[in-house]
Image (cartoon, rainbow, N blue to C red; front, side):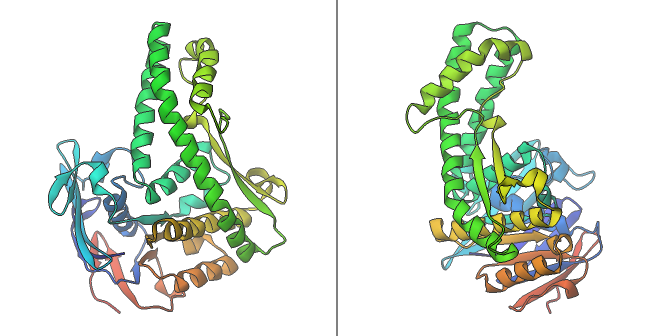
Length: 362
């Protein structure tokens, strides 16, 4: 899988963008604030239909414009797929093979894994960040997870509104029945993913830090359901919580309150691990995500790295590029100085300056 062309119009600070990326390494260099991250976000939006840094799609429009569009061609197993996503008149529209499609019919041709400087705060940050990381990783390998997540949020918002409005109990129970079915799917998907990725995570971290640093990762649901009757357990829990939830005006327990726990040497990594160790753990998780996607779906995703080498010390930077040089897929890397990158494979360099890209290749 690789992106053979990328085009954008009025996206972020790009008025027009046209790029023919290298199937292996693409180095995007330039000063800060010129649009390097915006270019990665264009690829990410094209692959996931979700932006990186905002939940408001209108913020993707170039200043004083009312619409934006990103399109590209993806080579997958010898076939070329044409993808596009547009935001216009307050509506996002996806296109595949030049035809309008729903989200469920859009995915499958382009998978991306993103690593940004913000990710290094994953371990110490708020639980919401870890849930977002977890759901994004699952979605990359199984796009239907996004629909489950969206449906859960809708049902959850409906229950919360009824709680605040002191709605009738029988109506709340109806929403709880719907909510429990979707919540059960989310919890099972998350638990299954963590079980699959944790072995690779431990192996990767042992390579980066050394085998003496015993570590683990565990999914921690706010409602701990068993192997059977999980849906009924969720309904029973919300029935017990109902009056307390009414008083507070929101649903306190459920997948929206779950967490991902990391431990190192038997202690919580959030409070015990050094900053360097935490960065290593995030790097180990990202590499494990790529490995798992290849193993499960027989797909090698496109990897997007946003200036992460500046966040890693020399040893961890060396480990990262050791992995990348052995990686078989397409990589996009942003940097202020390409000389910092230790890339051995075929590569093209692109200078990004004030919303324009120098298309000359090195």
